[in-house]
Length: 311
Image (cartoon, rainbow, N blue to C red; front, side, top):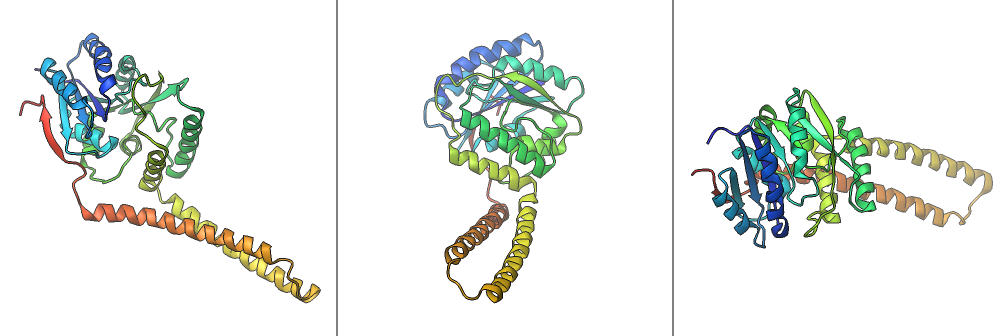
């Protein structure tokens, strides 16, 4: 088999209803491109029949390869494991839920062939809930401001990378990361293309509200110290405001005399300051927690077995 020109990387976690449909659409698209390709699935500890289906695909299609994780290590670790096994000159990541149509892959490859090293995608007419769309927009804006990057859609995993960027990603050994943003730090000529977006047909989204919050924390704390700097600035402003307020109360005491009417106002101000302090402790704890995870040097993931790689 010739060396693949395009590597398709797909993380899988409990996607049994979608895998056959995905393959029925993806394989003809890749064949029609007329270039050597490989499709690498990473089973991220699925509890349904996803792994069995993937093993059958690896047996029936020489282009299909499967990485089996020993447990659930998360979407980004599943992609990183496939990056290390990929050999294509252009690497495309794709979700298994069919919300990003496989038919859009040639558009990304064509954009890569124009000389770009990273090609992102911007979902058009998103078929998500209003909450998901609003939250995504807020995250995109705040993350761009904090990291200095310029990406329109951080949440869309349909992206293409060239081999040089992937080699640099493989040298990174971070325990928690966000691949689109990490790749952007190595890109010298990135680009974006609009892609269509479909409603999830089968199964449930793997990103609960808690997981989305955790992912956004990883994104902001993993690529910038701006949150810490903003909190330090807030602390300075709060200190100045508290001194001015103390002077105001002192002058008021001399002019009006002793009074008790402002007790509840003072309590409200106190609770506000306490809330700021707790938030700051949590923010610092987030960074300390990341340091703790890194210094332990535990394996980022454990591969139980691989299929179709020719071992």
